[in-house]
Amino acid sequence: MDEHRLPLRRPFLIAAVLVSVFLALPLFVTLPVSLTPTRYVAIPTEELSLRHYREILTNPLWLRAFADSFLVALASAALALILGTGGAVGVWRATGFAVGALRALALLPLVAPPVVTALALSRAWVTLGLFDTVPGVILAHAIVSMPFVFLTVSAGLAGLDPRIEQAARSLGAGPMRTVASVLLPNLVPSMAAGGLFAFIISWDEIVVTLFVSSRSVFTLPRQIWSGIRDNIDPAVAAVSVVTIVMTVVIGTAALALRRIGSGQRSGR
Amino acid sequence: MSGAALQIWGLTKDYGSTRVLDDVTLDVAAGEFLTLLGPSGSGKTTVLMAVAGFVSPTHGDIFCGGRSIANDPAEKRDFGVVFQGYALFPHLTVAGNVAFPLKVRGLGRAERDARVREVLDLVRLDGLADRKPRELSGGQQQRVALARALAFRPKILLLDEPMGALDRKLKADLQGELRRLHRTLGTTFVNVTHDQDEAMNLSDRIAIMDGGRLIEIGSPSSLYARPRTRFAAGFLGRNNILEGQVVAIEDGAAMIDVGSGILRHALDPSDRLAVGEAATVALRPERIEIRPMRPGIDTGLDGTIIDIVTGGATVEVLAAVSDGRTLWATLPFHGFDAALGRGTPIALSWTPDATVAIGGRSDGSP
Image (cartoon, rainbow over all chains, first blue to last red):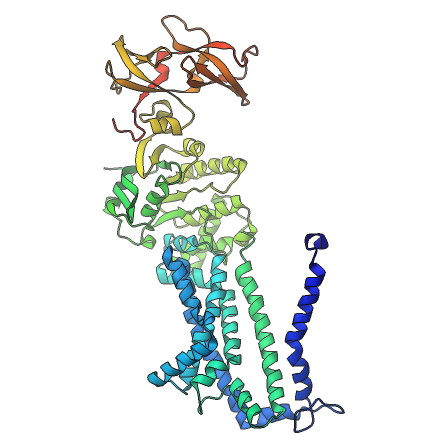
């Protein structure tokens, strides 16, 4: 029956597999390289070694990069979560002309080319004294990742009857209580998904980071960037593998949560 | 005014330059079941939402227990509201939904549980307390919405198209349920619907609305038997509308020339008909009989059958009179003359008290 419904199913399936393989290709190089026993970048031929993983767990440069990245990702995700959720709820409540305008505004960081955003933020951060500071990088990442929270939470809200807010009010709950005990509990899965998306976006972010930091903040992608420019060290491959694993795990969790968030009420 | 649970006074609402409510004034008596009935866009839901506190009036005021509540936030009004689509909280169970207003009011756990059980029992939902709303049928969801709105024992229950999403059979069951609840609780119910059958079956009084205005208000039987406006006559059940001119007034009756004949209309004390002026009367199809006029008793017109529709207990006959206008006559199925068919010439007759004089204009103004 599926074949009947989609006559082109097989070619599309093959295309999908090819694209997936192409996208996953870096991993097929990175993973073996990270396990090489040599000091230089090579595909291991005789034996495998975890020495480069030991290296990134002991080298203070890499440890600091992990710490910086984790702090920046956590803080910027929290900030993006607050801004994105607030924005999504506001647009959900708005009516008429305001809806389209506010939506477009909230998604602007997603549409603008990263280099443009990066340059704008770089200039602004110098003026505001945020350049090359941890708060500056956190704020920049929050701006870049906010649209993902906005979109995810908006999808969750789309499945909610706007009248549940009125219902809560009519039952005696004030505006704050309505948000806290009716709106937010229904948005938990979407918010969690949005927060995780924001986290991995910050974890991977390089373009904006390069433009708003110089000496004091070294996130992981920035450390990798410097690492491959100075000397090509297989430790970079090990870091990449760790980053890829984190991204896949968190991204999968976020996708699963998003499904729950926008799908739980579809049976209505 | 004593005995009024709710007074709506001069309620007007403008959205920009669009007037959606125009000077609506009405009282709802304590314990009454009042239905706001009208087509979509008539403003009935806006009235209800203004009472609930979700629409702030441009002009006018709303009083509850003699005190203006127009500026009170919705959560301070203590009215139960059953929303269109029910607006149940998807993250809470049935019991959680019903307990919500009690929790907000700070009731202790034991009392809350007792109240939830009591009200779920009242709407016959015991046994489903632990289900989530999405696991319930439409009818069950409606009952949860009712239970939630009644749990805190509001003085007034507001219902916005509560049967809107239900099929016919379920509607009938739930109408019975609503009547029973209203009887047992003695709470004032204000219902909004576009369904005239629902309004007739449920209400103590019906307020008919159109174009943002209150057209006519009265008991279902008085609105059915003696509508004063053309809109009410046409909206509540089927009616034949006959227009003509008063040619004489004699022996408590007006003789009205409707073009295809002269009708005798028994005058009601409220009728304001004068010789030489235009008159419009409404005639219920079930008051028409197909038989020759009895001299001195009946009035009527001659016509020809255009169509016959068998509706079960009744047969609807569509007949054309001499000037081409059509009338519907409803006859009992039992005893219907099978010899009648399309094209049969017939005499349509009724007693002079069957016609009701109505205002010429649909807005009810004289």
